[in-house]
Length: 115
Image (tube, rainbow, N blue to C red):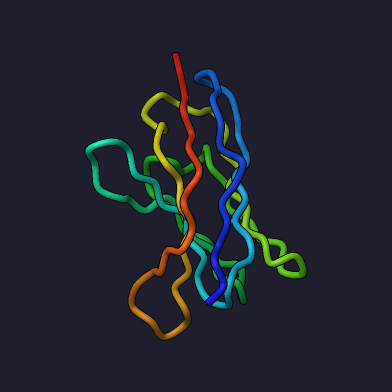
């Protein structure tokens, strides 16, 4: 199995931006999730490797944008107008077409937003 690698996290002031990368991705739905300390992992955004269709959690709509570069097998999460509540470890996962759940193989990337 191919291990997804997340990168791009860091420390940023509220209102700032970061761009996360996930590579390589398998064919299917590629999703970004996040987990804050003491909380469960939650869905952030996903994109179809084939159609490019996207969906977002309400908490990030209008601020985050998920996109893909198929030749490079890389999925990006552009995060703008970051808030302290966006602080979490961000993971990317893949849900193969026809499967019911996402699989996670990377270690995640830490995003810390300070006010």
